[in-house]
Length: 224
Image (cartoon, rainbow, N blue to C red; front, top):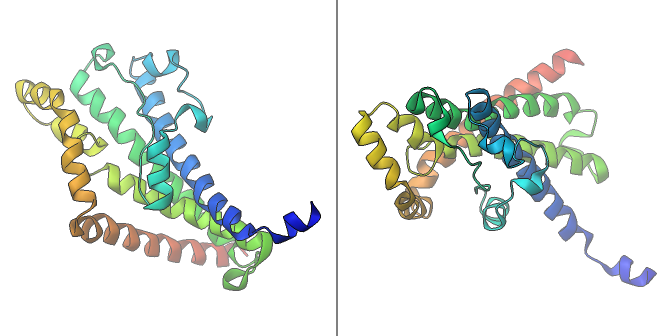
């Protein structure tokens, strides 16, 4: 038995954890933000279905989490929202949609700041062992969170950005587009596999990452 454990390639498990833990954390915060905002605006659907929780199992979409780990983007099981429970359906739906990406932006800022604080103490670019794993998880969580926010702000159904943009349309056009929202997934898949994805989401994510990373390291040096 001892020989079996010694011969295992632990790097595979380590890399899986570095990918999966941040992904679960980011999508859980994103979906919880949707559900809690909807609840505060008068819709109890997510609360009654047990979705106002930090338990990632409640939010996982198996294929979505695999895509997030492998490709770098993905999705969770959408939080159910009944906009008929809102006092102002269009605007409150937009606010609920915006809550997800905003929670990821805030999360990214906080986690990048933490990264700046622990970067040098854990060994920086020369970190190994547990310190290197912690830095990798923290860094990936922050980067994935900002990518998730930017991706979801795209005005392509069924992403959050579409609900925000659609809210500015006249009532008749708004509800018509919402009915055909599910067909937007085809357009979304085409976009993701095209070069336009890297040019837009990819570049903005990397630019935001570099900017926040620079600020976090500067802040970390001041605190130390």
